[in-house]
Length: 593
Image 1 (cartoon, rainbow, N blue to C red):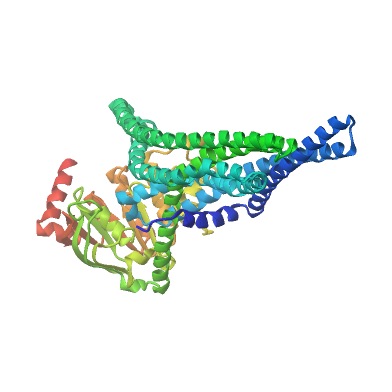
Image 2 (image 1 turned 135 degrees about the vertical axis):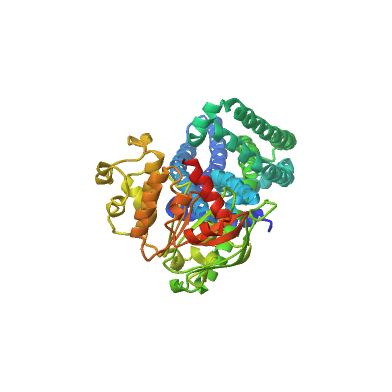
C-alpha cells in the first residue's frame, strides 16, 4: 500500500476544503492573516505609545505626539477585535460546509464499492479508519489554517523586530521551539500506529453495542437475556481501546512536557537578555514594554501552536491520511473500472445467461460456496433454483446479478460479463428482490418507486397485483411505513409483497428473486409466484426457493447441493429420476400430511 505523506495529504485536502465553500474559504484565510498582521503592527504601536507617554511625563504636558500614538494604538486594538470577530463568525459557518463536503466525498466513494468488498475484513478496517479521518477532517483543516494564516505573519514579524533589537533574543526564541519540530514527527508515528491498532477494535465495539441498542437486534437480545453478555463484550473492547489510547497519551504528554520545558527555559533567557539590554541603554523603555508584552503574547501563541494547533493536527493527521488514502485508492480503482465499462458493449439478451465452469469462494472461507457450475438459461425462461440450506443458491443469485465476481470461470449476461453489470447498459435490464430486502422508512408508493425513481409509471399498477389491502394500495402515496415517523408498520408477509412489487416496478428483462417469500405461507407463496409469472411473461426469471411447491411452476429446476448443480430438469422429470429432488419433495410433502 502506497504511503501517504503529509504534504500529499494537504495537497488533496485543501482543494476539497476550497470547493466546500470557496468564498468563505477565502474570507477565513483573509481575516486570519489580517488579525495576525494587525497584532504585529500593534507591537510597534505599543512601543511608540510608551515612548510618547514617557516623553509627555518628562515634559509635563500631553502633546500631540502622545494623542496620535494613543489613537493609533486604540485603532489597532479595535481593528484586531473586528477581524477576530469576523473570522470566528465566518469560520463557524465554513466548518459546517467543510464537514458536509468531506462527508459527501467519503459517501460517494463508499457508494461505488462492490458488495464483495464488504465481505473482506481488510476493506472494513480501511473503511473504519477512513470514517475516523472523515470525522476530524474539518478540524484538521481549521488547525492547518490557524498554523499557516494566523501564526507565521506574527511570528515572522516578531523575529525580525526582536533581531533588530538584540540577535540573542531571536536565538533564544528559536531554540525554545526547536524540540517541537522533532516531536512533531515522533508524535505522528505514535498516532499512526494507534489508528492501525484501533480500527478493528472500534468495529468490534460498535458491533457489540448495536446488539444491545440496535433496533434490529433489540427484541431478540431482550428475549434471550443476552444484554449482559453483549455489554461485557462491548466493555472489553472499549477498555482495550482506552488502554491503547492511554498508552499513546502518556507518550505524547512526555513529549509535550519536553517542549514546554524547553519553551520556559527560552522564555526566561529572553527576559534576562531583554532586561540587560534596557540597563545598558541599547533599547528604549518603549521598545522594552512592547517587546515584553509581545514576548508574552508570542510565547503564549507558540505554546498554543505547539500544544494546541500542532498537537491536534498531529493527532488527527494519521486519521486524515487514512481518509485521503481511502479516497485516492478507491477513486483509482473506480477509474480503472469505469474505463473497462466504457469499452464494454450493450448486452444482447437473445444470448441468455451463460455460466461456464464458475466457482466462487468468500473471503477467509476455507471452501468454495459455488463449485464448477456450467449452465445456460435461455431468454424468457423461468428457472427455479432449489436445494438445502447452505447449498450456494443465494451466492449463485449474486453471481448472476454481477454483485460478486466469479473466482473461476465466466458468467455472461447477453454476451456481457456479469462483472460489468454495474455498467448502466446492463443494469437497466435487470431487477432483483432479496430475502433480506430493505424496509425503507418512506411511503408505500416511494418504497416501490425507489427501484426506478425516474420512471413515470404509477406504483399502483404493480401494487394492485399483490394481496395487499385495497385501502392501503389506494392510499399508497400518503401511507408512511414507519412508526418512528407517525406512520404504520406492515407484517413480514405484507412487507415481502411490497418488496416484490418494488422489483416488478423496475423495467427489466431479467429478474432474480432470492427467497423473497420466506415469511409468506406456502399457499400464499404459490399464488404470489403464479401471479408474478403472468405479469413477467416473456421475461427471464431466476427464482431461489427452498419450497418445492412453488418450484413446480418453473420451466426448469436447478437442484443444488454442496455448491454444485446436481440435477437439472422439469418438475416431472426430476420426480421420475428418484434422485435428490425426489427426496426433498417427499420430505416436504410429508411435513404437510
